[in-house]
Image (cartoon, protein in one colour):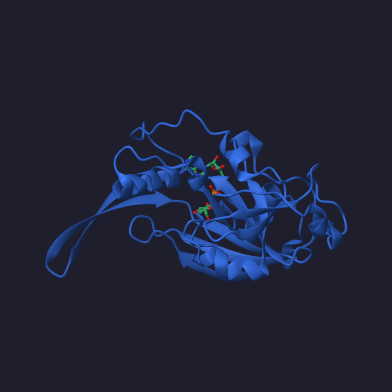
Length: 244
Ligand SMILES: Nc1ncnc2c1ncn2[C@@H]1O[C@H](COP(=O)(O)OP(=O)(O)O[C@H]2O[C@H](CO)[C@@H](O)[C@H](O)[C@H]2O)[C@@H](O)[C@H]1O
């Protein structure tokens, strides 16, 4: 992916307060079609990708807090069947509209599972020694989080994720439910509930970036409304289903 920071002043001009990043936002061109996004932290994808090393894949060593592989046995008509699944947490996601940037606010992060799946795809297409650039596993997603905290309402989890991942503190009542859907229906079927909220720089409460204790390193980017169609159709930009 090409990466270029340009025109920083243009973004700041209609923005009012300077965003938290010391270097300020800059434009970055992503994907084969050159979708123009605003990289809020202005770090650049290549720089971020350099932080990943020592990746290896092994069978699950024991019980996991995030996925539980199971086999389901049932009878359909007269036929005995077995279906293998992975039990996983439901989740919330938030479509954030940034009024200052006139853009959807998205997060970008390294997804190890995408790295493994995409490497397999590339090797099938190009041969067994082909490799995937690490940047190919930094996916563009809606701000999102798993529902694993008992006692918290989904809206409250959404509010926490907006604060943690994107750095904006927004009132609970301005988070509106849009809809929900089932993800990975063949292997998981976990429901994702999607919310909508509008933000601007007056709501900024921190840098965002995720929970450092959990090892999260999340970039926040803004996708201008006039770039959305191009972004969705550009298959070279790795993205989650929720964002589409
Ligand atoms: N499989 C796993 N293995 C190890 N550690 C894990 C893990 N899943 C989560 N974690 C840990 O839990 C932390 C919190 O995860 P989040 O709640 O931010 O969900 P995430 O953004 O990964 O996925 C959210 O966003 C994506 C994209 O929309 C949805 O697919 C997903 O259901 C939703 O929870 C992660 O930073 C990580 O430390």
